[in-house]
Image 1 (cartoon, one colour):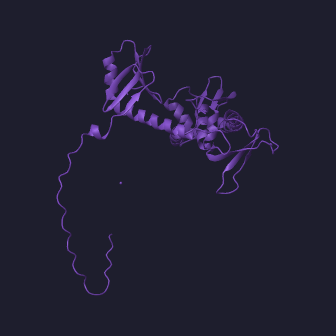
Image 2: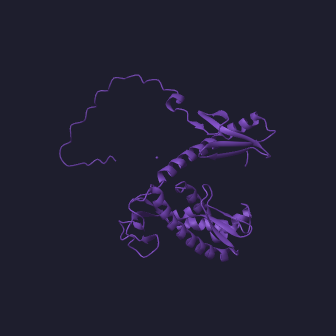
Image 3: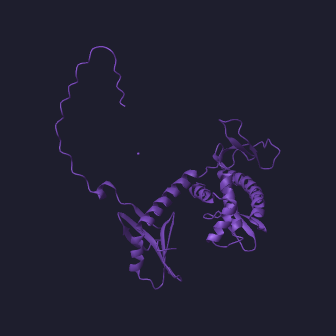
Length: 296
């Protein structure tokens, strides 16, 4: 990582109106002295749960996780937990802190983004119960419990929206007294099945265009990665992509297939991605801002 916003006057006929007299001026009141900025905006505090060092960046108190290891440069990473710093064994602490001060705008922006992202993820969490709603391929889907299992499919059945004002439903054949975990497992089993079928179809669609062949498709439930590719041709895709719009699913599919040409993120790799998906940067940005309940 590199050292890192008419008055329209209508003239009506008739005599001229009596001229308006200005209202008396209110008494002049001396303005209260301005408060110092640090009294108006209270400093934020960012505390990593494994923090072992603390530093003040501007008005912010940042307690961060500091690690030393076998590396040649200082690395900064920000997660929902906070800031982690990795440094070579020989790097003086003063040099690390100088870098943090130099990169303070970046660090504070990323910390704020991570906090907002964590809030979005918490709001997106699904409470698995009758009437629960979540996104399926970018559209809202509502759970309906059907203890009588009044349909022919195994486990669950998808019913499209009946009109513009309605939402699609996923009818689950579970008992009326099923607990949240049982409802979640039944719904996720259906979602995973749909995900695997869709991913295989999209891989088969894009692989010939990219001139590659994948050998296996595996579903992943990783908390921080949408997908990965192995040199042996195995493609792993996070099943929770099924919550997102198809254009985002396709971006991840193309991204991972392109790694079968280049196992890095070099300019050559991005050239391969762009060869079939010129708007990949916009799709990547949309994917980064998508709020999917990864921890449910």
